[in-house]
Length: 397
Ligand code: KG4
Ligand code: ZN
Image (tube, rainbow, N blue to C red; front, side, top):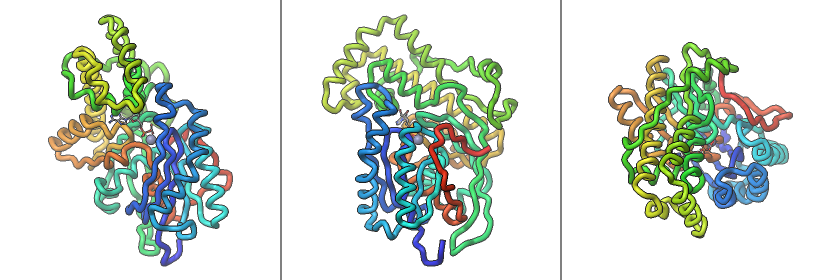
């Protein structure tokens, strides 16, 4: 990047069911952050339909990019680089963003930067209004980052390795070491599947988040006992050392919920609730409160408490085990209010700094992609010509 450039990055994100574009200056200042949600398209199916997601991205990408530039008050020619999500995510969905970003960068003669979606989530914690103050602060010592979303429940040790100052910007690179993961479902997936089981809306997280305060979280506690046996059986494919790694498992709780529903003969009520919600033009969690009896609300509260506490216990165990100096939590499930409250309380007890992205930046967005691309722009780390979608892309070693 030459002297005098403004460090404006246009970020593009299409890994799942949000078409997003944003303009971010020097990795910190969000000039625009536009998201076209596909919730209405996938709602009737209770989950993302990959082919529909790709078509919606194709329909939305150009208007969303135009809106991001207009909102930022800049033109194509003002952009210093285009950044795009390379993976992980749905192949067809990723390809829309990547093809668009490649063509745009080529026609503008600007560099193209490939960003790992998980790295994007981690960088959302560095962005205002809520994130960690400065790169200087965030890059001191080791950070334990929990990325907890619909596709991932991963723990990383993140460090910023500085090298020279370039054009007034600190050059260096973030490095990540994966120290924990789920052995089956992601936490967000559990929220989504359980909400579906209970006849609630999609995506399930915000519904469960809104309904849980109406129930008793201690009414039906669930346990997470089966994890060790599973890891042992499956082996560890990545660089994770099974002797020190932290494992999550969320498929068992879904089965336990199913059994609970069967045992307490809740099916008729669930079906009635599902039908009542589908008939509403824009169903919202508040509409579901009156459609849930006490047993259902208790079940929802207990489910959320169990998941949040499992995430909390293991994240702080990891922070202790790996000597982390701060904790960052990001990804869609980081928007959960009980999670934020219980993590914050534990961090305070341990005198450990903790940070979350703002609510809006917890779920998928393109500002986080543009933010994660900034150190790469400074370091001149650009995408190869053959850049393509990497649906199972891993982060770090
Ligand atoms: O990060 P994200 O937008 O997309 C992925 O990368 O997966 O995360 C979406 C996930 C969904 O599973 C959704 O149910 C969950 O985040 N989620 C929540 C909340 N808001 C979104 N889970 C719990 N509580 C919430 N408030
Ligand atoms: Zn995500």
